[in-house]
Image 1: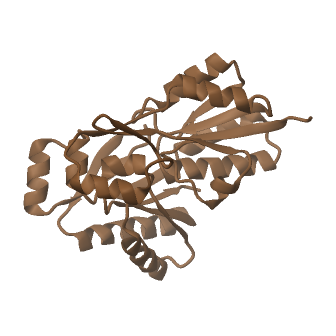
Image 2: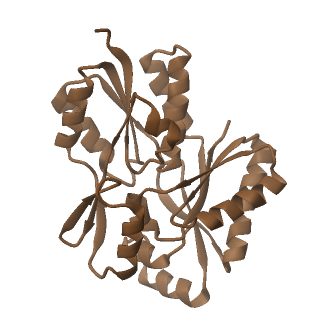
Image 3: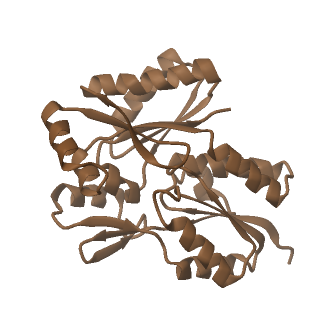
Length: 283
């Protein structure tokens, strides 16, 4: 049997759209979600609906964790039977220990694997896999694909409107003072994952309407100045808001393709319900 060239592995913080879900060479390894002493597997035994129900009433601590090196090793050993090489694209190394576990798993399994730090999450990972599949189809060799994707990761742009300050506060991303003032003044924080893969506060807006207009302006500006033609709109149980945002952007930037998707449950744990974001790669 002739072995396939490349297997693609992502963690479940990625936005697994139809292309990734149906592609025979793309594999998803799930993160874990912990509610107190209970552990759930992201996207396997906890649906997004169940998660949001729990977030509304749960009083115990909620956190996420990456798969173990052993879980990665088990997957990589299986893939090595059918593939020559593996490219793993994971959530930013500054936000999670997933890359470390993945690399350790590859060493245990003794496979030819390279990790690409997405410097992002969600649709940021999606965009890199889509780009990688195109490069592979074009005939680029393994090392060329990896190098190109690492450069591509630095071109990621994103603006995230946090829907629920409580979740951001409980996840340790917001101080008690910021949390109190944010709720008191109804401030809508805009955060961003910078080009080092780190989460940073970018701006504060004093109403939901102004915050949404902020996102619209950023997309339109990049479409006009950078020639961006594909933007992902990601949401946390806020489909109506996402669709309304899409319509508003289309009015001002009709040539931009807009793709709506829901963030994974492992990300919603930190961002909270009603979070909405716009994400894209510079050409």
